[in-house]
Image 1 (cartoon, one colour):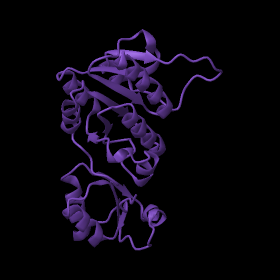
Image 2 (cartoon, one colour):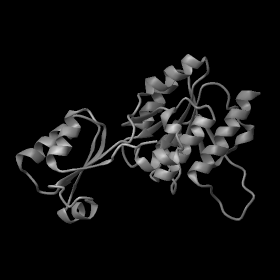
Image 3 (cartoon, rainbow, N blue to C red):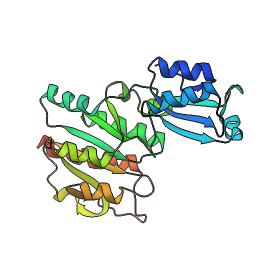
Image 4 (cartoon, one colour):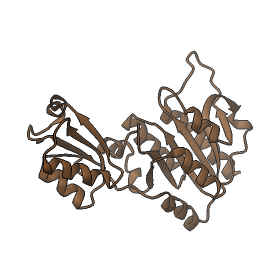
Length: 246
């Protein structure tokens, strides 16, 4: 399986990437650089969802793979992002109630890839990630997903809380993982559902947690108090699968 080159360096290459419609996750620009070509690139970035970071030249020198960055480095997505509507359509085409993973700030690309793999195997119709403070669809994510990214649509949204509200109007219920919740086996997780998994260190944010209809805890019998985010996603996802099968 081939993966798209993710790092784009140099003014002409970066500008051409934007104008060709390539999905650019992040743009790094030399702080204080005001010349015309760089400002044109910044304007192109602001037309879409690209995150723009102004950094010292020394940072760009460290990031550069070629040594010829010319004050700009862009990171392109390894795969194109889907729309939330595409995920709902996938459920409709299968004649199934929607089952969607929503990830609140998963920053480790290995975790993101593993969760996408789990989502595919559990029969989820797609994954939703936030634009900021989260891993994008890099080559590491693609490889860790073990091919699942070819089959499981991933949508990127600006406001995860608003997306939850919008999906509630479409009939979905939401459950998030949190140690302070009800034991997952006691919850009704059937029907159209969104499974919310939080950040590796801090869990689900307060605002997102308040948007959820249910808070599920995973029974733990060991000496430590938390699971890796991708493992927690797998455990909860397969409780949803078990209830759907019944």
